[in-house]
Image 1 (cartoon, rainbow, N blue to C red):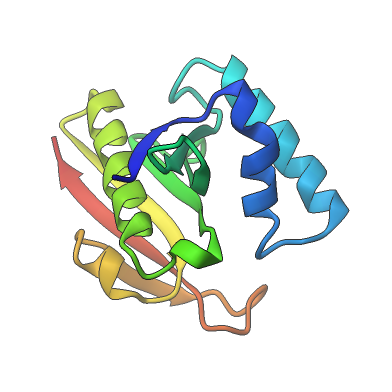
Image 2 (spheres, rainbow, N blue to C red):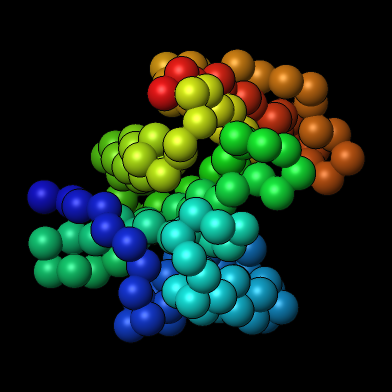
Length: 154
């Protein structure tokens, strides 16, 4: 049974390796490790990264995801870094991580309403959770990624 839990210090090397699958440069690995370490010392949900990992029953990390308070807007949160180890793709791991992160945001949020953003492909997983696509982000990605937004009532 796959479970989702918070990232802890001992997870960082394996989490960085998974994050490097889509972004394999040494510079990205250094940035990822620094952000993960920084996330361990911030108050959860307060302008810092909040990482979750998907783990097997043997506690092997097979996925990583993150969420943060969006510092540019009140009552807005951002999802990012949804990466699943290739051997485990298509098995619902990203769904588990998405639902877990949305629940963590619900628990953290104290406002009567809030928004969550994510930059991804217009995809049914996010649409099924209430996300709708915004403008196409053509500046950085040619794959057709867009900003998706969901509004939730507490």
